Image (cartoon, rainbow over all chains, first blue to last red; front, top):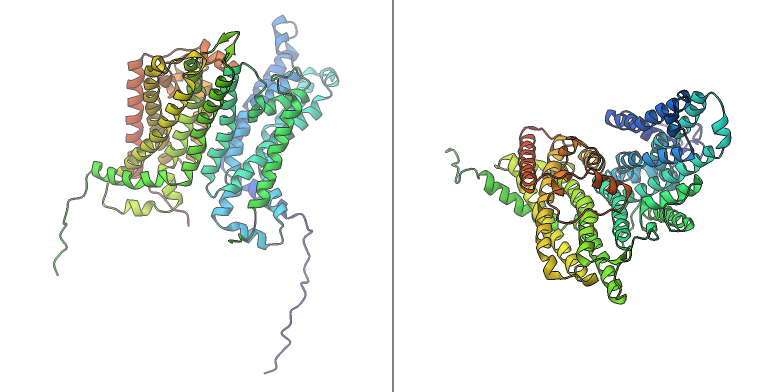
Length: 282
Length: 281
């Protein structure tokens, strides 16, 4: 029997473009969560404040003859308040989506499988980050921008928009900071454990415990200078600067911004350390 | 061949629960969770140390609107803001929802359910272990905090001591009530933690702001009656809470909390008895 050449043939198929692997992870993750009815319910609930604000804008635009309706008139602060209200939903969506993103992969030892594919660690993290950021944008940036469009539609003119043209970049920037902070922190915590429940409770502890500690120090000192200790107070401080509103706390806003940047950088460092295909045990 | 004879009768509910209690208490105390618990309970003590050091270095003490704040007032604020609003609910959610869910996740529930003990004894035993573990760790933290903070601002430990005892009792009752409710959530639902967090940090704070009967569907409403300290005004929400502040009588609260604990545990026990836990492969 003749023995043929047993060499390898070169791959004749198409090569996927490098740097697009994260899209596969993101698409699969988004599709998984959209298929969950409980999660869809949470997303719909997160849009309830949008409906309330839309009714408010309708009343402000159409009942101008009633003097009391003037209190319903939108302002830059209205949009700021809207994004602040959405913080609650940001928390729950982050916990629901983000807690298991890396923890479940670590639990199932799937990280090694992911990283044995033509996929870099950065792409893996980006893909996971994209899942969470997409859903958070759905409850923050998208409704806020739609609210701006709804205002123009109900008013039938561009007067408000022209007078507050900074609102579009302000909403985009603040929503991005809000989303980036929540996503980076949650993903870093998710990489620290194999239990998604443990991760969720750690995230809740970070948010509420820092707020409670600041609350105690405020109650004792009656000074808001220590607001940088609180996760949400830092976000509020930076938000007020972006929306050109008077600041709530005595902490200089660059300090709040520095804390936020530090948290994101710290999260990136944790992710760099924890997301590895092989653990070398010394 | 003769049939094997049963050397002893099937153990009863109480003895079975105590066996599970023994087993679970060790697991709870020596786990990674204890690190979380330690950090959580070490935080208030660390704050108390900072306040004490500050008070020692600055003889003028802490002043609010020009008046010196007494140590017992600061202690009261810390009990409200750190323990009642955060630590007690979060411990209830964390431990309560994972009593059964942890065994399901680790695929070890089968080993417990194949023992000749009532299934509900597993839940009761684990609940008692949770209660012992959290109470044994929370109460010393509160006591340390008390001894560090109470003497500041000219306060007296002796005068404030009765309120400490009331606080310790209130926290133990709170841990029992939250733990029982979240144990029920943990046995009934697939994603208990998210539901627990929604209840503790979404539903409870929101509903307490509304006048009417809705607030009676919270644990915090009944807990408020057991607190001897004045509610702090640290935010706009706290001020609103004080406007709508309506508390039931002490005995009504205790009775309702006892009812919540008993009913929740009974329902959770029934759920464990009847539910088929499918382990993911």
